[in-house]
Length: 283
Ligand SMILES: C[S@@+](CC[C@H](N)C(=O)[O-])C[C@H]1O[C@@H](n2cnc3c(N)ncnc32)[C@H](O)[C@@H]1O
Image (cartoon, rainbow, N blue to C red; front, top):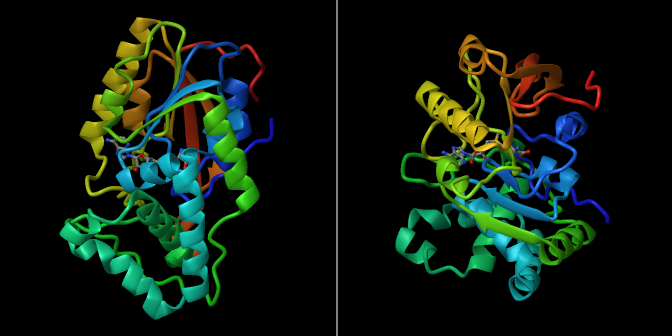
């Protein structure tokens, strides 16, 4: 089957290391869970037949829902064509600021909200997703004269993938999203990364601090006890080394893509941690 590509640029996107993640994945598993799916780079690479995908970001998960639903899919693409034709700095701010009036915003049909999310992602500065304390998208205009909001073939591949397979889409906290996981299931966690310095990690209205990393490690251990295959990526910080010291560490070097200045796009050591041995010879 043809594989889809991410339809949005997403902070922490896993396209660059998708092959490494694939090498480390178990050969056989039942349901695949991805509680922090973001742009879906690894999901699309793995293309499992049964999956539960989740992200706290409701606007993003609404896009997945709309791609899966035939009627909404068609309407969303039409809306995206409209955004492309109308694109300008003034238009960008008009669409961006729709969420300032929550009453009106909540009445906007799903497919229009989905098209807005994609359009903002393509037209904003550096493909960032950032909201303020009122949950209002606040990334400035990306200064592009023209935007291509979608690749119809790619979205078509995704539509087919979602409809030919058993893919459940959620928008809840990561802990709730794995409640149904059982022995033999495979869970890949790609959370906002831990950091000892001040790097970009505010994806949602709630940040993801040390306490969240600790809560996540408890969920990891609980799934391990249940007999699931569990894999997580993160930075190789002292906290992460301590939390996962009983598991298998695999080291990789990857270039992060989010960061306004070239000097911020430095190489950092990333780790992939698993609760199972790798038999495919990861290097
Ligand atoms: C590192 S990104 C995932 C990137 C993704 N793997 C990709 O390839 O694009 C982390 C994601 O976690 C989500 N997130 C943050 N806190 C969360 C929570 N408590 N529960 C579920 N998702 C959360 C963010 O919205 C963000 O999309």
